[in-house]
Image (tube, rainbow, N blue to C red):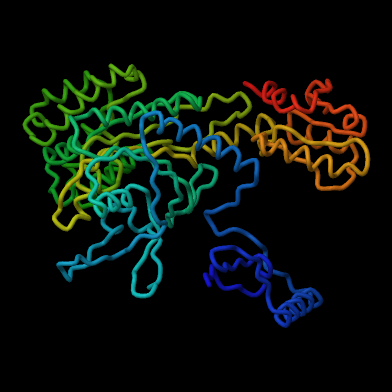
Length: 512
């Protein structure tokens, strides 16, 4: 027997148990149900307040309207990924916190050590039968583990799934502890900047198609940042901490960033001031050319490589016709440890919404970059697979669309039903069931009310309330004449259609 979980007191028929791969309802034993009922009655009689039902902090339920909106949003994003030739994969929500190499007793950490300061947000689980586990923090590290485990050296994939972060939620800005990510990644050894340019083109396509308002895609390169830190006198051991601090520049002014660099990260005031001269620069090809001529930066090999690739990237983006939305921004750092080259982040500049006076503050809506060394961290021989990818901020975009929909008062359909099968008289349930079965068998999305003798007005009102476009009405006269009365719900126009031609007529009317 396959058991899906123990029934807890109070859950009753909501508990599920499986037998031979199937699901079945499982109830509490009669004695336990009686004891529970007595406890509830005693609590109510004594004036004791019962616990308030709620979801855990940083999570939420999605009623049908929200679920339908999210489904449309994800569908739009995934269609873009597919347009660019990506295949879907899925990985477990759980990852091993620690694993051991076969040839070594040294434990390897799967999640820890990949996220910089974000590592403290990982949900770690208690020991489960000898395995130390954690909920996945993102979809990138599991993808790298997947590539190394299966010895894959070339792949273009997308992945839509939930991730988990022990963060302070900000629900108005679309920040939760459990949320979806939509990732697109290209793994493999290719000519420089071609895959990177395609990732940026994908971000541009998605944000343009969704019509969220004006946006800019900031780009930088970790090698350029590391070169800046080096020429400014920062020890290599402090590159990553300095990078995490610079990453805060889009949220706080330079003075606060400088104060953290000196007071918390241990940088000298002179080094912080020199960093400030660089990281507040932004522009395009002109800035790249300017930095290539910079007396100090041009002498740093790593920075020079990064600037050369950035120049090539802008040339490709020009061919794609999207440089108008691209900004080379030296303040962009992206705090994750695993980035090794180009990094990018898309930010909405404003919310063009006449219904809302205040802009919706949601931060960045997409981000990503190149991580050439991550797969090698999971390979016993350290074999690297170059990768670049982008993650679309589905939750933040969803927050914008959700608030816009609420402000507009527009009603969103939560089902895709095309036809309601209705009857005007009593004792015609059999006729309804036979007709709806014919529609289902023909692939037409159809419903009927679950009453033997529903009133016709109530059936038609259900069509209007749920947005069903057509009603197929079969009454005594229609049965005698061998026709079905097809009603256009919006115009209320009705026409008799021969029974054998009904399906073709419905398909014709439903054509876009």
